[in-house]
Length: 386
Image (cartoon, rainbow, N blue to C red):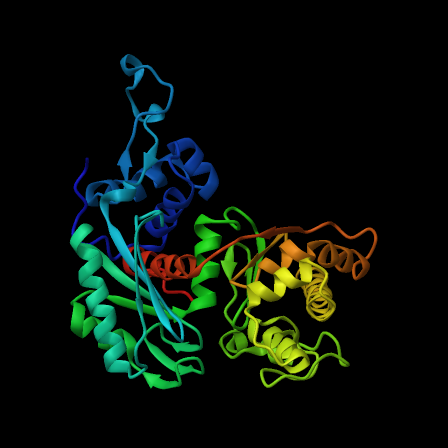
């Protein structure tokens, strides 16, 4: 196996385009790679030579080609060695830190979780350093760390505001770098998840793509031209101002009838607790609704209609090819998916192009994987374009 150089940076814009194309879609023949990037054979050779010399790209035999004819560049596609570098990704929640190790192609090869016993930034950084040591024992020489946090993240380094952690202006990247000696990238967790799904998941190869998450909050990410659109409000919980039903429930977590008040797990649990005096888990509420219990069934049905309206509105205005519905609250689709789909149909023009709605049963390791993908993008390829 080719040994990868200690550093692949800096890459020119042209080299970076080639590296990303092979990383995401490879192995690719030179002919196909030149076609995808609209490059001449000479230009492609000039761009790929330093990438091969650095060890970022390798030549591999073409599948199905007999050994005796595996000669010359036409039958030697370019690929990356996915296992040549590992990356650590963390997702920080109110109660836990979820950690993963991924390959260069974001395949999860290890998991390690720890309870979050305090929210003091220094203590959290200590915990992340301890988890990094644990993960690195089985997967030595990690290339870097990505951290996903719910809230506003500035310059992929500072947590400007995180309501869940009650943080303001925390230089998390510096704190973790000091303790681990590794380069660190910090990003909003939804943005990281969107990047991961765009490069390696449901949105790979799509021009227009949306990720919608429901769980502790409402997350929304829009991809146009194959790139995530960054906007100021994406990290600020705009779901509380996205009104779906002006006569809907009012909860402590959002405006009356907002996406937050109708769809988040805490709001659904609040409505049931207020009506019954009992504190049910989200999973118990969904099970009761599926069994036909009147109050849970009404709340879940109302949430399903709200989700259908939200998906229809996104479809009408953003016109995506696919919407990925993810997050810890997607169990709603198992119980009331028919209501969601009927509402989408009712809220769209009869001749509108159908939008593929994909539901991903995900856990917090998927969010941690998203953070690792940010590390791959920024630390390996210099793709700091968020």
